[in-house]
Length: 420
Image 1: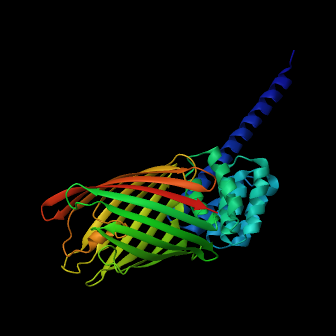
Image 2 (image 1 turned 180 degrees about the horizontal axis):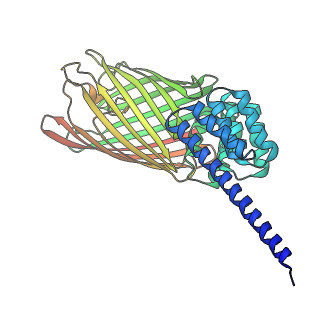
Image 3 (image 1 turned 180 degrees about the vertical axis):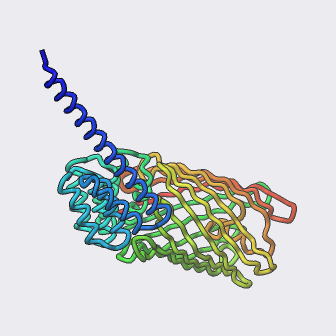
């Protein structure tokens, strides 16, 4: 039988254990609260010194709390204290080499610091422990893309999408890699347009283009042939997409035709594009059209957002009143669903007004009267071989071609793209 002394000792031991466990729980809870307070200070108020003070107190209570140390390292990275950030991340990885969050944070740091090979080594080390990590695979693709190792980047981003085909960042990155991966591209397209009232004869447009990817970006030469108003014409175009940084790239274009009426005499444009955080993309630019009278300057803005397997976009074109004091505007909204690779998609678009980037219809901007036009369209692309893509588009326009007089326009397009 247990003695009174033994019972008393057991009770005392149980009491001490309960007190210790309660203290540990309070300590952990306090560390969690301090981490949350640091997040609030950093994200909501951009008060990094206050956030760090919370994190230092949390580490005093829980020196092995990895998430606290990782967040401290990220704040160091955001404030350009890279050596302190590295020390924090390496300290976590030394204790927990399989902790993916630490590998992700360190890889981001090395990428921001333009140390692509070091970032790649960190990512590959993390993938040894978690081969199916979306975060690490996406970062591997991003780093390889920045290093212009496009084939490897394409493999990495496809692995990320195989894990989760709705990974928004991977989907956005896949499109950028696809545009940069092939050295050469050839494109052929044909458009047929039928009018129920406005014109008696249909329009035809055929295009051939060649694109070469260079160290500064892609360069494209294009020849367009059109038959409209029962006349034939040819237009010559040059386009370039110079890369300015990891975030920014630009668009430059120039086109010429000596058959005014079938094509504008001159057309040109410039845009600045940005790949923004949270899978947004944006564009600001202008377009230039010269027919026979004064030139037309048109300004454009675009905002796109990748969400899972979707790309949503909004665009506007604003034309100052060349002939009036008013500003005319056109608007468009689009949605694309990627059911496979970056080349496999279906899309829809709706719009108001005529776009100067629409080679088939921009000729109708040669008017002193801005008339009402509505548009709806569908598109389909399918990768049919490893290197070739088939595209089919259909559009409907309801256009006011004379004041108070409307007609319908139906357009069907077929295109083929070959990369090599």
